[in-house]
Image (tube, rainbow, N blue to C red; front, top):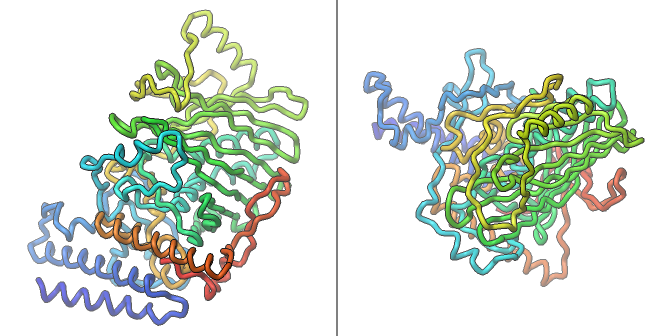
Length: 525
């Protein structure tokens, strides 16, 4: 067995070494290749051992070999063709952690993580946060155990999980119909936050993330353009020039004693190029409750106003606070009005589940009937600062559908083992995956190459913590050097400009990332 393991490791390392002479590949990127190669060797050794033992599939699931063999058979099958045309072809059907080659030779995205969620039971966040009540938390160093193995740049890319809604909007001829689908997309863009109580890693200054999904018809690039305050800029574009979706986010965090409130400062802009339309909006507030004791739970609240700058139509959505008895938990209600302020549609549902559209008259008739039967009593609303009772209210089973409603969007079911994967969606599980041949093409600043996130994904909390500290100190040292030389940081792919639709300052994509010329990228890892 040991001889076999050594042989497999040698073969894996030889494969990894073939990638290393590629121009522009840095030391940390090379180590990432070797790290994945060794993990592949360990997994293959486990498979050979099981075959040698007569195919016994009841091997200890806690063994290291099985630990890295994370094909879980989960519900979602989000497969697609290999994006990179010069991708490497492996002999084994297993490619990376949880990924596989289908019988027709097409590569399938992984359905699980290399390791289960790291337990936080033995850690207390109170000792860190007790002096931070009412303060902004972006400068507070948090233990890595409270993170999830994704960068905030990758979390932003989860806006694109329901891109089919943008394609649907592009196909519609009526402006009001397009607006209601865009509204559903704006709600769906925050749906993945449900039960995601782990904090994403703060991106390093200059860190990037790219995502190409040919099966969904788009590509995305994001960059950390500022460190204090932390600002992340992104730009997604249709591969068929149908739409562009872009914006920047400053996640302003505050601690209120038992909860953390996140205010996502920044404007989202969606351009439907065929219709020459542009929509803008800001995301709702998000609050994570029971930071100190009890079960963590999330609510989103606030008013989101979506503006069609071409037609003058608006959609005003109210993300409702949960209320005293929790009846409004996760609810979203609103309406579309035209330029003359006439209501054209009512939108309702839950951001964790689905959204519907209905004619205003039918909606008002239903609400009057509810008042007559006394089924909709007045509720006392609250915000994140109110701390009398932070227990998770009993969640209503589903949305009550009003007769005559049209379904706009329904959330994609999560994997059956999502709770063991930081409550990731099937889409989120794939975001940190190194696809076959990808390491030869990525920018050296891509967060898939961050060793601290990779270590946490593999369940090594000590290595993740050490690497996170090393990277942060390297970033501080680079900032001191720039200060000494009186040198300002220069962003690589985005520049501050003016949003042509709102007139406000905004980060604009300058282009050129996908030309794959990365020789002047900073060495941040």
